[in-house]
Amino acid sequence: MTHEYETFHVERRDQIAIVHMYNLTDSIVAGRTLDFHWEIGLALGHLRDDQDVRVVVLTGDKDGEFMVSPRTEHYKNPAALGGHNDPKGAWKIFNGIIRTHQALTEMEKPVIARVNGDAAGFGQSIMFGCDMIVAREDARIADIHMGMGDVDPYGPPFALVPGDGGSSLIPLYMTPPLAKEYLMLAKEYTARDLADMHMINYAVPLADLDTEVDRIVGKLLEKPAHALAWTKRSVNRYIAAQHNQTLDAAAAYEMVNFLQWERAGFKQEMDFE
Image 1 (tube, helix red, strand yellow):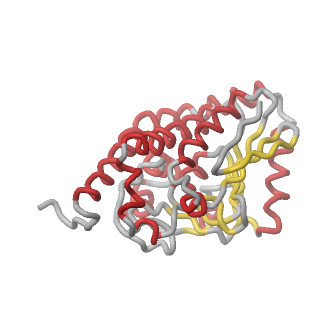
Image 2 (tube, helix red, strand yellow):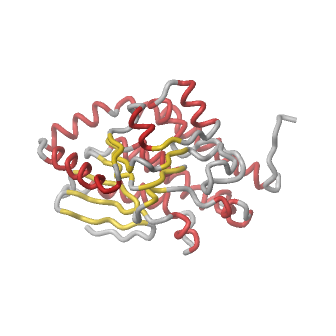
Image 3 (tube, one colour):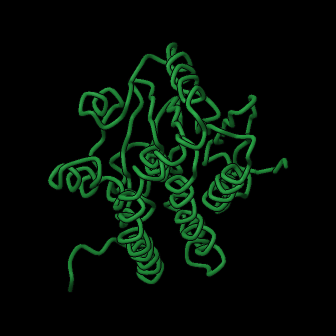
């Protein structure tokens, strides 16, 4: 069955489904501010159910961006953030986030991140939620929630709890001190840095990205589908447990943050007084 989406398009190549994610700022301008979080979870569920698909590849629609948060200017407009606190909008955003990570973790098919450019905010959480990661070596990777505008030009000029997956996934990839530096200080890395830290599979020049992704996909398709599916399910039990323990709480704390910002007139609080 073919499904239509507004914030990305799905390309089929035999047993491979390639999800081309659109620029999020472009989607906001087009009036689709809240839809990506919901739609990507929905699409991953559809692909999980599609028995003609054996491997899923996630990538950006244009070189330079895998998936990034809206530009900082977007967050400076209080009206632009209203949907985060509207009940329907909050449901679509935060339930979409949870459904996305559940699908990435539980899907009985490998999901490859083809990181053709920067991954920031929810984009880097999606990247780290994939089973294998091949990235353009100069791509910038950051969780921008606590960045307060420092990860130019991405993310809000205020601080938020990393509620879209970073709080769950990053402690699985880094030691606690490094994870807290990455999340609390919004420390930025390149894909080459992460490959050298053994956090992603490969960091390659853009010209070699498709060759490396195609090689991995080809090797995966050589494996028996059932054995591959059960191997992923076995390996991902600890990731599912981590999400069950952390993801709902982190998402809820971020929702509270947005409510605080609205009530405070979007002024930064600096202490507990």
